Length: 424
Picture 1 (cartoon, one colour):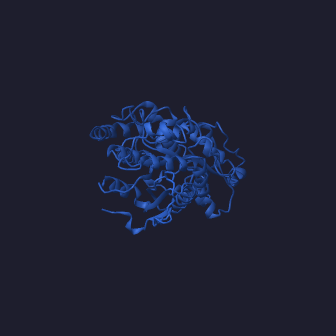
Picture 2: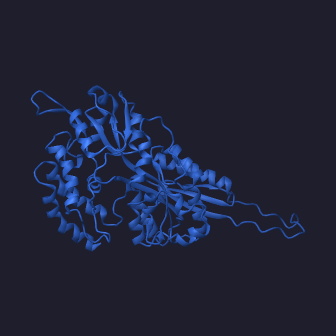
Picture 3: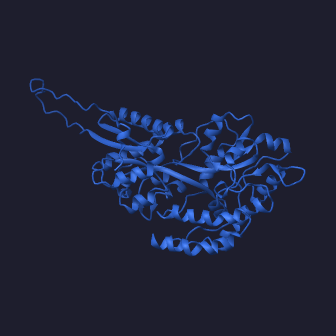
């Protein structure tokens, strides 16, 4: 079974070789009871941003709590989910606290690997449910149970090329703009050759199909997660709007997973003017030192304001012998002090804590990151969702290629999706 042996754990906190006073040096009076040292093991992905944030948080916390040792246990980020699940499945796991995402949480809950913190949280935590943005907290709740504390969210926002907008005389996207506005701007910003068949510059790339479903008032699954609702008129019409941008209006390329070009590369080479994408993409674009001005804006709104988000946070192992101490550390990390250290390393996120403000980066429109959290929607919280998504992605390929309607594609894939959901 894979372990973290490839990356040596690092322990920060009190020394392990505490000296014991000799009998001759012992005081004549009975000493006050000293807190017993506690050792916690904290697992997290080993990418640069997560590692820097985790090590800074561990160092700061242990300096304030000298009775606590924290052993860092990084797992390779590229394989983090699998390695974490294998570790917590083991009866010999030593992990107390670990980073999780909303997409990983269903598997952890099904394995009874994540501790329900509700009672413990109410009794002792320094942060309370009301301190968090509802969309971020909801990803960790199952009825009255609470399986972790949200730390941050990565929402979908719109990146746009300010220079291309200016050159075309098109007004920048503004809060409250609609899908119709999006299509109109995309038409203005699309550049065709004289024969009108070759497109040298697309007006926009596409958002996720899940976001288009939600934005049109549709839902992906029933409330109990046992059947898909993608074949409803609202769900199909939302995605059809996006497909028509590709095949009817010809202002957007087909998605990459349907054989289209990489939308990020198109944006960087100024061959697409608008790019819906995860907010963390901003760091990559800044590092690229692009030769044009770009900015952020909220996603356009359909019938319903909805922004796809992914939420990460901290969960406590159901096997941890030190759950109260682990919760104290987790609450500190997601609280004001720990959140500030996280934002120093991953600035283009939406902090789950209401009182935390995204770090200023002097990017025009960066407030869209926090605004997106107000209408945030996570993927369905079921373990089978990645397989469901793969089925739907495959079913939509002929739609993006102009060979089939969304409604027809959904009718065909619905029985297979429902069978997968029923099987769990």
